[in-house]
Image 1 (spheres, rainbow, N blue to C red):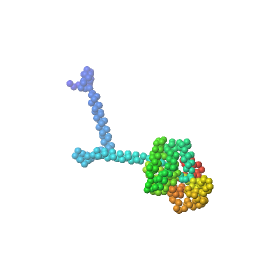
Image 2 (cartoon, rainbow, N blue to C red):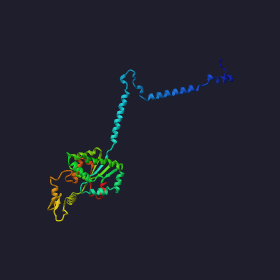
Image 3 (tube, rainbow, N blue to C red):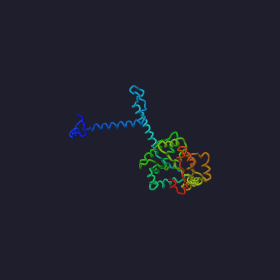
Image 4 (cartoon, rainbow, N blue to C red):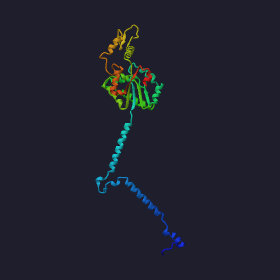
Length: 314
């Protein structure tokens, strides 16, 4: 029945509005809105990418285009492993080993007994900075055996003596759990200048970043002090009564050598050797260590520093 009246029966209108079939379905409206939003977003994404321009291929039958994920994963793992190992090697730093090697008559004893003594503030500061100090733990007499029973016998070297020194380096790092080492030992400048000496010194570079410390003293002062040292230990009068002979190198002589006579002997061509265990002045000893460790790793300090040896050493 059609309703043509402008004012329909109010009862009819009320009944129609309460008709279940006439009520709006909110679930259907929400689904429609969600669909429209999804389609809009999809169109927006596609319009700003180049995905639609990619050629369409049928990978179901094209075996050449099939990706071997297992192989690719293994390659990636290998690359990551190599990269990690390279990074570890790059970040691994060698322990530093500072060797104070003298030379003779440049206050090495003062450095060992005063500058580096355990009660000194410098020793404590070195510990704070991560350095263990080796002085009396390895006395010169032990290294004298290394020189005479190993380094001086190239064909019959007792390597256990050298190994005692390198083993000490390893154990010294555990004394106070320090990574770096400093050793003061003048005998390093007294080693024979031969192949085995250079090889053993060079082997230290495998485990340590080696730095050499040498003091410079003016030649005219150094040579005079060396003569006094020589007179004191190698030219002397025996204490036995009635025997007034001087002894030189433990052999009796009638007259002690003067400074000029001694100097002529010590600088004679047969006695002068460029390098260790020869004319042990700063320049010759420095050249030997430079050839092994490089000039950048050999530090020459000034014996005459106006700041004093203590400050100069540090």
